[in-house]
Length: 240
Image 1 (tube, rainbow, N blue to C red):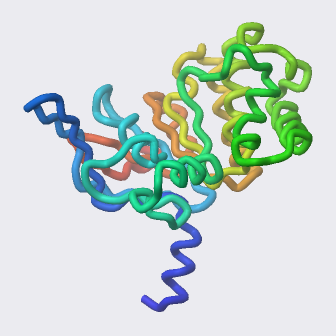
Image 2: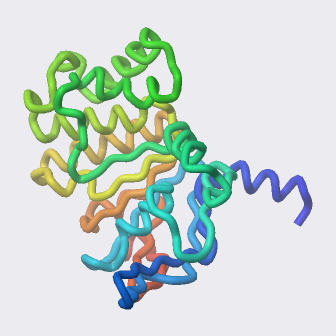
């Protein structure tokens, strides 16, 4: 492989995991989750991660996002080896390159929708006015322009998730990692939030990695992988 080809591939790969392993230890007990996983996410692509409850899907997502440390192997985000970074540098990379959406919104209850959506930008050092303008733009894009001054307790479940989506995208991340982001919503609202995530991610050319149990939603993504018996296997979306 030429140096130019290697650089081009590095530029197009947002997240790369090599020989990834995770084992939990409690006293003398060792509980392996998986070992030797290889996984990559290219710029702009959408990927669903399926698997039975307890298979390790959330663990894998946390490792890819630098929220947990692997027992073995390496994770690269935006070309940077996560294990080589200090805790502070890892946090800065997460804030700049990644967005997160969870099953429960994790919005700060004392802050308005606008203030919650602004937070990643403010943590990254953006000026307050610029952060507010960008957050307002995203909240309007997710249909919450009339609710920006409302706190989470004053929003419906679907509105809270849409605010969480706006917060995840406010920094224009390279990739959004979603952990069952529609799992706590009714079917109709879940479909609306899911389509909104796809629309916004494609509009911003942001990659999306989505842990889900909903095979109907998974079929709409570019790629589907299944975590089964501690191994990842590719599944054709039309066969999910």
